[in-house]
Length: 372
Image (cartoon, rainbow, N blue to C red; front, side):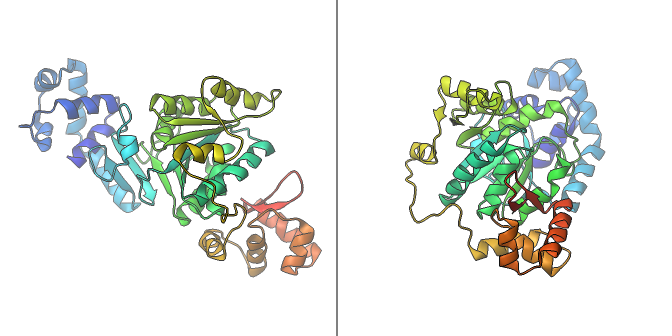
């Protein structure tokens, strides 16, 4: 059963709705393996398919190389996968309308029902970062898994904040696992896996990202989560689409407000107008699930065991660079870096430039340095 569902999903122009129809209409007396022997007429009469669709199914199932190539790639790259009929397929996602038939992933187990989607604009600014820093570490402290789309902007901020706080985050790609996008986030994706998170896709392994893939990706982000927090979104944006999917799936939607003069707040304000819960602080989210903010959790505090968990994913060229990266686990000034590391200023400046060029550190608009 598992292999034939994978094979069906690999046939060009055969989507989840068609395969779902096959699952629902398959006679109990018909073995899954026997589908390889079905004629065009049998596909038409048994499943009420058009002749054109039936011919595509027959031709696709006759091409065993489709399945064999994918299975070999799955094994070679140690990819985990499940069909919608398997027990390890996430329960929340399984119950949306027409869930993806196949889910591929690397990293941790999926199916955590205390998951929260955090999405927003690719053009997010410091206000968006401040909102993420106020919300995500506290959610992690209360054992929430953070789900987002791995894109630039709010998505990346949410994933990074989760990793820094020692939490679990799930990246949902709009491409196959072997073609992750954006390429500039490869290091972030590695950090997600190293810190106990997961990278997920509903697309075959070598699928390239194209614009048409992202609405389906957004459905999965919403489907994997109990709720969806939108931080900075234009009135017409992918984040609003994700929020709409969440509403359609019966999930909670939260929106962080902003300036009435900021176009990136327009989408959030419209969501509030349409019934989303306005988020002033993390209590506005947690209260929806009967949780109180635990006073013994300090969002900005990162324990030494968490640091040890994160740092191995970061590749430095020497011990000096490693000491700088370790000190930048939280935003820090150059002067404080000199005091904390004992490195002479000119040498420190040279190493900071190298680390920035290598994509390990970034400097924000206030001049503070932090890990990417």
